[in-house]
Amino acid sequence: MAATGFTPIKLYSSTTPSAVPLAGNLDNTNGAELAINITDGKLFYKDNLGVIRIIAQTSSVANVSSISFGTTGLTPSTATTGAVTVAGTLAVANGGTGQTTYTNGQLLIGNTTGNTLTKATLTAGTGISITNGSGSITIAATASGDNSLLWYFMG
Image (cartoon, helix red, strand yellow):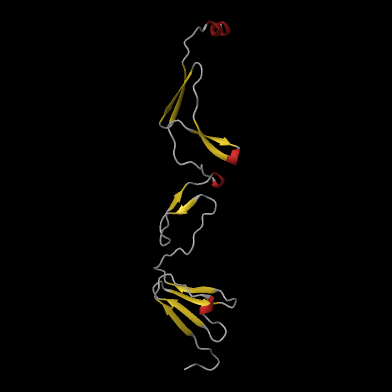
């Protein structure tokens, strides 16, 4: 029995996981209507602008309703519930390198084409050797020629 001066509330329910009522499903003019998803533990209503809103949800459900990484180059690699794991390569424009694999001795060099980073290695030259190691680059002189000119300037 309805109390005088109050509008009765109608309650609808769903057991379909992640189901959300549409704006057309709930009436907010002729008495309030609520919808509950008893599987997800969420209670919905339609506001005065016609937008479906969540009144409450159980705290034991950790759902991610949406996720966006913009132009980072990253994407979610797991489902959208609980902890979300991220995969992909962080784009240069977002502070990353834009690169995924390297070989020993490679360096990242600024490249004005596309404002990116390019992988490069040092090149040995006359009298100079380059040794690319795991996490290191060794540059050494290989010439053993006549040092008399050097001694002339030092002496």
